Image (cartoon, rainbow, N blue to C red; front, side, top):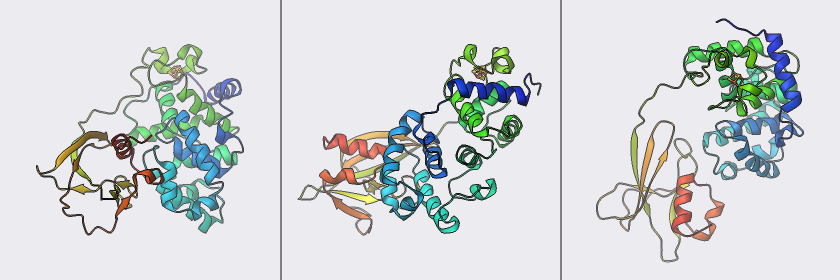
Length: 337
Ligand code: SF4
């Protein structure tokens, strides 16, 4: 791979970009303890900054420190996560808090290896916490950084592939400076989230433009290479909506693992034609589409002895954590706001 930019030049350009344009007023940048940075990093996985901010602020008001989070009920943590999606992140967050409190007396460890051993913390998240909160010189490789590097160095292949990820890790290790690593990492994330956007990057204003191979070759729309297309299957689920004489609805708490683990939902049933259709909607997961049919079902089939079933007042739905499409359906159906 031919390159036009040395690690020292790369770092100098990015640090100057940080000084002039880097974000310095995000909530987790104020008093950036390992706890505060960690929560932000987990929320920011698969979610954009502007969506995360209000969730982050509410979360921090309730769970002020790692001890409070570790001592909380996982249901309450999931409730605060409601709407952010990818709920395994919240369950791992809770598990990780308990591990740090039990094993590390409430302090995140200082080494990359120990950090990576914690639930829900991969190499890039570990690098972010170590560099942003602890001043260590650990590189990162989140989605934004991958895009910038794939373009600057015209890295071939889709970065979900192990060999491509390995190349990108080698690049981030080589180009991340040992000093001011936190500022450099922040600058890379900021560049990826602003100028080096997925479509129509603003190369004219970019500090790396004179050394960016994709830009110089007019190939910014080709890099990073896209994921090879694969059709994802459709699965079907039928759920029943049933109210008792007091107007309560029956809900089921889903098992802790699997999709929507630990969240409340409508009970699933085997369907037949005797049920009256209430609504139909689709939700897309990473690996499949789920087409959900909600029916009015008086006949209880196959779920009566489920100890996770419970009746709930419609006015109390706000206290429960639901998957987004189920919440949307219930609120629409019962005219709740
Ligand atoms: S020059 Fe353009 S493509 Fe290259 S890093 Fe900058 S914004 Fe991204």
